[in-house]
Amino acid sequence: MDILLIILSFLLVCLGLLGSILPMLPGPPLSWLGLLILHLTSIIPINWWFLGITLFVAVIIFVLDYIIPAMGTKKFGGSRAGMIGTSIGLVFGILIPLPFSIIICPFIGALVGEFINQTDSKVAFKAAFGSFLGFLASTFMKFLVATIFFGLFIIKIWEYRSPIISLFTFDI
Image (cartoon, rainbow, N blue to C red; front, side):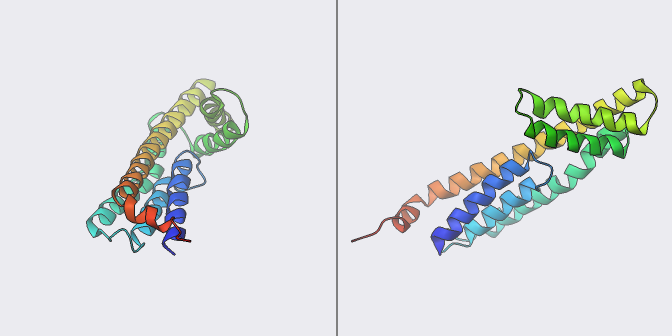
């Protein structure tokens, strides 16, 4: 059972890293869930302080993920359409296999969203830029936390490597 829990926790921490970039997945909460499942094994003792602090960080980042892009959009005069355009552009950026498409497409999506919402091109460009900056700041923040959680996962695995390795050895 411990082998299954370790594999599942590894997959969740990796999915959390991916989710920090993809808008459809909650990156840091998934990574935290991986850390929780790792602590549910019989090998790694439950550390409530560790789990509590990392949960607090994951929840704060999850909430800020919605606040920061809205602040960036609002500060530069943008709209909800610009934020939606940014997310749609990100999906296209992931699907289009061109260099820097993951950066360029969200900006183009925000710009298109603002053009649909507003008539003035100068205002639309400024708002798209604000929406894009908010998106980048939020994504960087999520990726940083998910990377730290991945590092904490590796540290825990390394700290308890002897009992974990013994799980994978079979005497014949």
